[in-house]
Structures are given as C-alpha cells and as structure tokens.
Length: 448
Image 1 (spheres, rainbow, N blue to C red):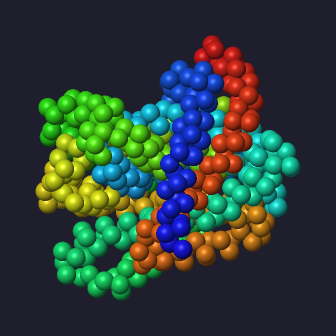
Image 2: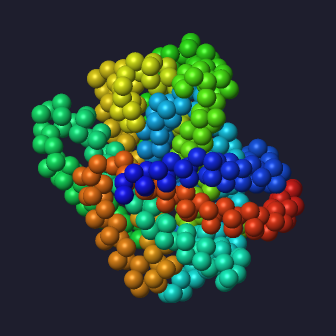
Image 3: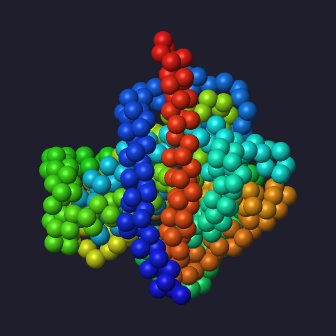
C-alpha cells in the first residue's frame, strides 16, 4: 500500500500539477493585467488598515492574513527550502520565486472569489472557501467538485508532518545532547504534550486561533528574520555571487543531476506550492471568514501571502544554507540541514534560535490547519457535528510524532494535489467575475 501512495504522489506532482498550478497560475497572472506587480503598493495600504470598516464576517482582514501566513510560513520555509536545495540544487530556488509571482495572481483570484461567493453552513453562520465558491458561483450541478475538495481537505490537512518535524528537532537539539532521549517513549511524551497545547487553542474556535496567530506570527517571522539577517550579514561579500549562482543554476542545472533543468523546475515548483499553498484552496477558507464585503480588497491582502512567504522568508533560508556551504558538505536533509547551517554560522546558540522558530512555526500551523479541516467537515456533515473533527485531528498529532513518515507525507502531498483540482477549475471558470469586480474597484479608488 505504501509504495502506491508514494508513487501516486510523485506522479501527480510531476506534470499534472505543474500544468495545473504553474500553467493555470500563469494564465491568471496575465489575465489579471499583472495585478501582483501593478497593485502591490495599494495592497500594502490595505493591510495597514487604511480602509478598515466594520463589516460582516468573523475576523479582520489583517487577522485573516496572519492566520493564512501562520499556516503557510512554517516548516515549508525551513525544511522545504532545504529539501529543494538538496534535491534540485541552488537553481530550484529561482523556480520557487517564479512560482511565487504566479501564485500571487492565483491567491488574488481565489481569495476574491471566497468573499464574492460565501455560503451559510447548517447553523446559519457565513462561511467561505472553495466548496462554497463552487456551489454558490458555479451552481448545484458542480457540487461533486465541492465534495471532492472537502474530503481531500479532511484527510490532507492533518498536522502529521509538523508534529513529526517538531519532534525531530526537539529530540536532536535538547533531548539527545542531554542524554534524555528514550526513543519511542520520548516521541509519545512529545506527541501528547503537543496535542494538549493545540487542544487549548483549537477548541476555542477561529476567533481564538486568529487571536493567537496574529500575535505569534509577526513575532516568529520577526525573530527568524533577524536571526537570518545576522547570519547573511557575516557573509555579506558573498551574497551577490550566491544570488547569481541561484539564477545561473536555474538554467543549467549544473549542481545536480547532470544538467537536468526540467527536474530543477519541477522540484522548485513543487516546494513553492507546499510553501505558499497558492491554488491549493486553504487560504480562501480563512480569508472567506474575514469582515470584508470588498472581494477585491481581500484578494489584494491575500496576494501578499506568497510574497512574504516565498520571496522573503524562503530566500533568506536559502541564503543561509548556501552561504554557509552546508548543502555541499553534509549528508543532512530537511530541517536538519537548516539546523547545521544555523549551528555553523552562530555556534552555540544558533540551533536554539532555530528550534524556537520551528516550535512556533509548527504550533501555529497546527492551529490553523485544524480550522481548515473543521470547515471541510462542517460542509459535509453539518455544523452540529463539526466539532467531532477536532478530536480526530488532535489524535493524529500524537500519531504524527510517533510514526515514521515517508508514506504519510506522500499521502498528505497527494491530498493537497486533489484539493488543487477543484480549486483551480472553479477559479479559472469564475475568473471573468473577478476581472469585472477589479475594474469596478480600481475605478472607485482611482483618486485615492
């Protein structure tokens, strides 16, 4: 069974997802009239709260962006970048950048639609997300697509990867050096501890999740940012050559696989999709709950997500790994590769700073993912049964900490890919509606 899951995941993330996410995103990027570049300044003004009003919804737009970034800025930026460099060489980072610009357009469309086509759940609460966009925007006959998205969401949005990577970091930084590591029993203790911390937050609903995320996320991004800038500063003279290496290697593929540029593009695009989740359909669920009746404004806020996530945070991680040279000298992979880079640049305390970042990143992602899965469950089974999902979710955190993960990660990857299919079909189908609303919105704000 395991090899089928891994095989399916590798197949679907090769050509099918490249065509759907990169190709579909490129169409949206051009169709939008290059909104990510032309309206970037306006989006920053919106996030700063220039146009805030009291409107329907559960949380503010800024909280929605914080919650969405909490789910995306995370281990994809720390271990995902390391995996990309390990498999695809420095050139994979260039293709992550390209995916991010395309992803900004995808996010702009998907999150604008999440406000345009909100639905009500069985308790009458306003909800947003691809399943409501499909049902309200495309009509009842498309409902099977909405069901497909929700089923994949329930299975794919579990926090097993985060629980596993966090357990690995805590064991290698704290437990093993101090001789406290007891193997399996340590994993169980860490898993149960994580479950209890997450339970306190997620059983309080989206308002508590958004409140915690909007405090934690700016702090953790700030801390990670400062640490990485200190490291990059040590190697300042080598930064231009390193950036050039990323661009050059993107078109030659020299660093790995004897010049297979196609493979480098696939690795970069795949890691970017995991890192910023553009086109997967998760962010529209949280942006759809925002207090906003201007769809375009929400889309503008949402499109900053891939920029912050991939262009800023992933690039900084990549520079640390490339400047310290650990990618050529160690056998480590994933989060351990980033750990060795931090330890080399900041001996003694670098690994503790990274551990703190991983701790906060992983927990904030666990909080937000529970909300996504809860929404999918609510859509399929009704609001009165949705809370049962949280108990299932909490139990899988313990499983993630204990189990070996190659199969589970491939399973989650495969579910992500299945979620992207209904999301991208509905987005491209309804794109003209967003185009018309954009025209109207920017006409009104011409004089601002």
